[in-house]
Length: 420
Image (cartoon, rainbow, N blue to C red; front, side, top):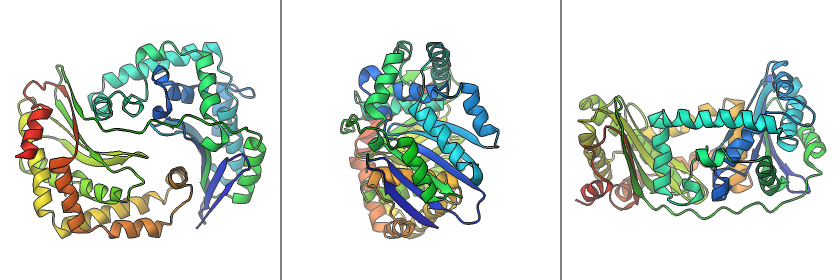
């Protein structure tokens, strides 16, 4: 399998990887225009725009967009994150050119029919309402807001109801004009693809675009803070975030190994101590996520009202203990989990296309898998212990609680336990 990368004269980037033996391909456009690229009055518009891309173009109705891909047995979808918006499809190898044409059409030629805007506005408002009815969704929005208070990175991707209710056709068109330039776009494909053919089609579809500056996102500052909402629910939801490295920092590998060993699987410390030994919860996990300039290690659990205080205290104790006695065997297991997860995921052309796009977005190139594996293998037990001590004692923290949480400790109380 060989990665090839090119760039059109206007800055539009193309990256692909041919995977021998496959009869299908994943292909998409990743646009560096996510939630953190919005001004405060635009919060939620990147996601709204993603929805509107499927509601009709100058050449196809909404139904024709769906039929074009589904008539050949493929599927098409999109998502919005805090740093990118992606439009992608999975099709058989003979239909790659069709998929590119449809994706190019929805990205470049949306008509923003006023009637469809109102229909989709209603859909998104329902989506926002559904998120508020899903405690283990909304708590992460609150945690993000506390982690990056009063910053674009801390705002919800869906946006607040009052903003979404007011977006106009001109607002959508303006965001496209500001952010959907060729330098903000990456065409990524993997599977049964021909790079030269992709280049030729990309030139025809995107070669005429004029560069635009886009909005340089505000540098993130992890502020920390606490959000707590009492509500009659069956469970008390607990989420703790700690400042961690961004994805351009090699320490991200240490952070990910640490969170895997702490709470990344059934053999992890938190799962074994909190769930298996004490029976305090059904779900508990730790994970590390990263952005261009910052990251967070997050611990989440759902438990009963009378056990949330004990769960929070034990979580802090386990974090402190990891700094003292994290074993070489635990680190080796976490390294193996990371490598296996990465390599198994790359057996999917969709996952591989997404990885290519993200690497080009981060580094403007695709580092080898061997390089990533070597960096994972280079993390020592001492590295993980040192990082664990930083997480347990020093790292700025944010806390979110939802449900019957009157008995839960405050962030200040958790900080005291960390310092003890």
